[in-house]
Image 1 (cartoon, rainbow, N blue to C red):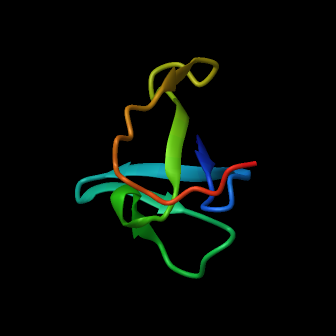
Image 2 (spheres, helix red, strand yellow):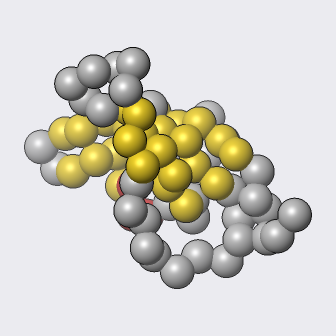
Length: 69
């Protein structure tokens, strides 16, 4: 599970599946599965794969347009 920011600044949760072809994002707001870097989201935090009760910050330094609130 990951916490992301949408382009409008709203928080959103997505499921991230680690596979042999990379980390894929399953999202209830879109109809297709995408690689995490193919989304328009800014990744903020993610559950660790080894301890589901632990969350880590994500270093997502891609340049994305995010609305200010």
